[in-house]
Amino acid sequence: MAEGETELKCYVALPGAGPATVVRARRMIANPSRAWEPYLPDFSLVMLKGNTITTASLAGKVVLLDFWATGCPSCRESVRMVKDIAKHYKGRVKIVGISNDGNRTAWKTYVAKHHMVWVQAIDPQFKLGAELHLEFIPTFIVVGRHGIERLETDSSGVFGEARIEDAINKALKQPYPGPAKEKY
Image (cartoon, rainbow, N blue to C red; front, side):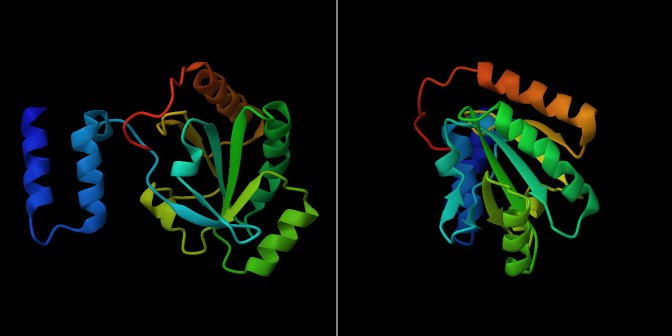
């Protein structure tokens, strides 16, 4: 581990080091588990009413990220499942729908028509999805209170819902003593 820390410190000191990579390197130096744990990357996305949601705003919460689009038949089929999860875990889990729709009007209309009352955000260039190396939608990611991914699945239906709920239940059991030195 000391070798890795030394390498990261050398990288941070380079004059041409990329700012985003320097931030990640400093976080790994401060918290070495970031080198092997799948932490949620930093993001900031526009929500339905124009305000933003960020990684930092989710710290301390169990989160279900739902990557979807209005033109995706499987995504449309999964809305019922997400509604069921939202109802069952109301007040205990933060659900964030992240659409990669390019047409904001179609997105807003679809969300309203289907009563998708959980947090909705849009990522038309699929930047967060690309950073997470997602290959298809819908994809569901359960994130624990410390910002570490607990499940990534493209499954929907009864089997997928059971896997998601199992991951949520496990994440809810994990203690969260409060924010660490850093925000996730």
